[in-house]
Image 1 (cartoon, rainbow, N blue to C red):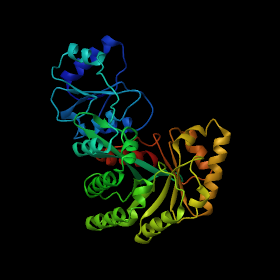
Image 2: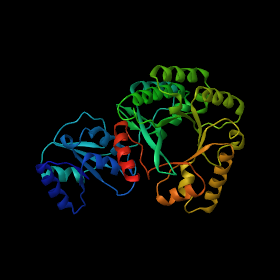
Image 3: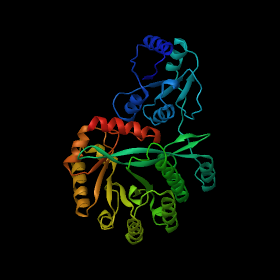
Image 4: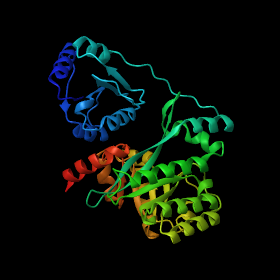
Length: 371
């Protein structure tokens, strides 16, 4: 896919692609964001001329970096860029041979291995930048965006950009989750006040491991920061993650009641058969429940899974909870979730996790297509 309007560069790219007998799509930057945000055609390369990218070069680079399997390489045409992205390479000469060589050369990639001791992890966090991606949540009844989930990324000078499964288990095991959650929320609040999310009115969900949810100091810090930023509490949903099982509901009840009294929403995340004592959790004053994306993806071909999800939705609705289905990647999955009474969906059918600057572009494209 080429984001480019330069005749010289288009000629070089077209010649290089013709030599490879490969397909080619040329489009504007906004259309490229929309295509990369959703599932569908597999793109092996994204070629961008920065002067034609409408200020979205960084957003396109970050979207390209989110593709873990299969990998997507981004080639920046004709200029240098101060963008930290392992998938990005610069082609300085407008020559078919240079483009051809870049297209047939794949950069070596390896999965980073983090140290497991707390001191090393703390040092790693000190050197890393916390970034946030926002995955839209759609109301199933009218296909309207009603919120986003904030998902963490770490950008480390030596290790590159890390996805949550590459660092969160180690951080939680080392007892560093509270400090990391605070850094994450600071980034989210800054984004809510900046361009992209300000003025949208959509709600933002943030993840809290159990030990962080039970920490009065963290909850007090959250409320202090929110009030200082002037962000309404009802725009924030605290999601209790599944990484630590709840064996004693009373302390959780106190934390959830405290957050509800302040005006926050509170969700149970990644619900599935492995969640212990779900029936007891449902008696707590949560506002919503999220179905595990692995189960949602199986529901199309496994009637027993769909039955479990339907029973879970029924139980949640009996306690006045809204239900979100994660991992919705096809229209068939959407239809199945609607048939069992799910309220909201989240997944690649609507959008991949988006950098802040891509959110308004996606919103315009989605609402324009679904009104």
